[in-house]
Length: 305
Image 1: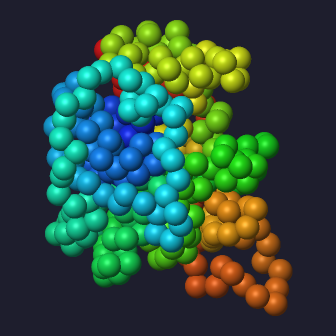
Image 2: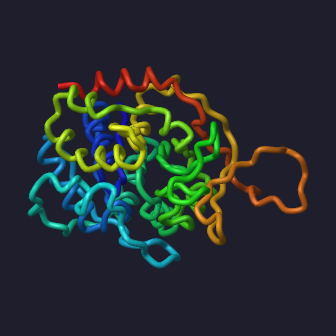
Image 3: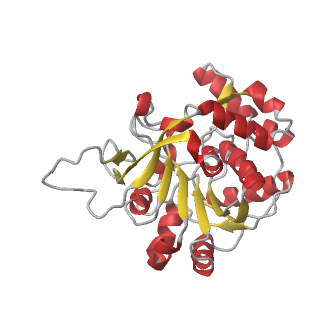
């Protein structure tokens, strides 16, 4: 069991991940960020979900916009409120600052805290920009984001870009090019781990069933599949069963402008080139293959009531 700071733009698949985290790890705090919803709504959603699921963790309010780009509208895939419009939400959207919480916590517990990031990486980038001394003190950053084209799994916002990275490519590039040790769970693996609407019902978790109804309906309409990928949950799957993933180690950068803005790119050759955009970057851990059935079995064992 690890001590986590759980960084999220909490929507439906984020909530499934948070439920898994609460059952398998020690959550020191939940830091919110813009993405699926505005950051204030993310604070409210985190508090609502923790209350409904009996999760005891403080909530912090993080960044409300990207580092360098104009803010874009929240995704509506998760409903107007990000949690499927399933519950009345009267919780407050005010909370202590997330970035300072990350800095203070890592300094107080050096080499003990794992950062789990399942939204845009703006809070993480802001923390290491403001306090670069914490970089060698973080145990590990495990993130869901990016796409590298394995088996045709490329972007889900553009042909190149995955949503979390696309929302703030500058933050993602700063984090991935830093000396933070990062494990990346990209669409290459998350699109391979699916559950059906029937299987969601079989979890016997009324809150999870309620929040994903709109999400499942959207999938049925757009994809002809009454189900969902366990995108964000795979960060917890990795922490609990790393042997279920096939990994490569390579430096990673993010394209920050042009038609491929938000694309994650890794070094794939050692041949000499005139310029090296990966110079000074550490090799990060990229999960490019997964034992989907092993991950699904662990997911059901974790959440089935």
